[in-house]
Length: 272
Length: 351
Image 1 (cartoon, rainbow over the protein chains, first blue to last red):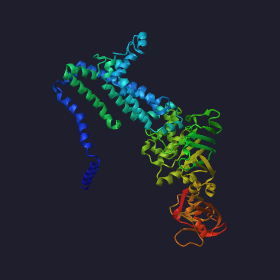
Image 2: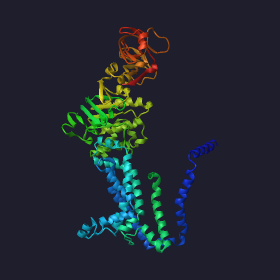
Image 3: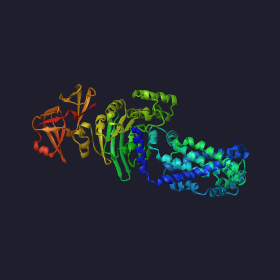
Image 4: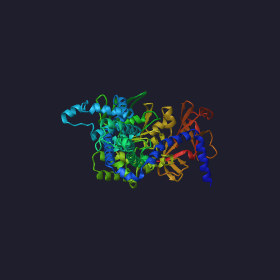
């Protein structure tokens, strides 16, 4: 009984400390996030759901979304981790300018990013033009174009997360490895990367989630071709015009996929 | 043999000192926080390049800005036991020790076998597969020592090896560390702010204050003639050597016997007495002090608000008293006095 009373006292004490205005405002925030999902579920045609989800337009989009989001995340890991390391651990001149440039796609409207990608890699683009003339390869309006748009928009999440993770990890462990005779590459591989693993996983998840939901840059740079560039968000948008039930079904699939990836990782890695 | 002349300028701090350590010698670099001790270690390990001066080990130059020589950390035959040990948290004790051997290209199986041998030598073979966070401070320290020794360095650097331990385990770990250090053939440089660690572990002390060496010498020399206030405060500890004759009695090398409060830890002992713990009397004192003896003042040395009184006789120690006490007792060179110290004020270590 005494423990129950002390628990009640503790609860009372902790409530006393919270300013009273915070609770109702927090409740509004919860409601604001919840209501749209409730509305979506309420409009869901549950009986036709299996049929709707099985349609080629949905399965094509799901397959394309998953492959492009994972590919974009892999590319971001490959080039983003070295960039994060350069930003966190070196004194390269112009570092803050580089960081600002890397963050730019995060704050830029994605449509602008897509347009910029077109000017760079389009048929007459700065870089794409010569490549097209030489090889006939065209990045826009292809599946690789989707990957390019996803990477462009989502990589900053990975870079910033890994950079802050590297900054938080104690560089003296790297010193210790050096005194044991480890080369720079061995230190990076066996000390730096394992120490930054939590931030790398968190950054990869954020990057993947951003890539999965990418719309503006993709539709601008890669278009909306079923089976080639039409990802789930594009399919939802298109279906809203013609077939509301299909749009709802695709949305539900997207929600389930996102939750399936994010929930198991949430407590362990996504503490930010 | 380490021969270092270290000149490093960091913002608003200038480290300028010369330091030697012979093979088999334990040198303690002792100084207050912020004196530059860790910078000395980093310079010798190659983690902090010199601005001027030079560092050589066994005649091989490691750092010489004038001659444009700099051997990177990974190629210096220098082992380091870092403060807090810095064991790699994701690796087992065994793989921590094997790390340096693996980095030198040894196969995993060979490196592990060799690493296990080192852990066994340091008496922690049974913790080989433990992760660092499950080890006690003393165990972690031995893993760190095994890791530093496994690559068979020519010089061993220890940065505050006992600072991470709680007081209760410190005494035992210090004694063990002394034993393990004795088995290493190269030079050893110990960095500490704790005078007792320095006195117990080192053959020679180098006192570093504000980036400069203020005094060097054996523990006995420095304890007898501290040259600065800091040294007097921290190192001016009387250190006597003797042998246990029963659980609470130690016979000094001079033949005198002292009673100690804690059971003595072994045969070959060092006893530390802080100068302030020694009381001086004109006549034989009554009361509880277990250790009372008659002696003669040989020297008086005033140091601001304190006077250090050197005493002759079978218990050669220095007492520290106030100028008023000197006047009351009419102390001068040659004055006969009674000295006393409580058994609880004697700290005993195994040598």
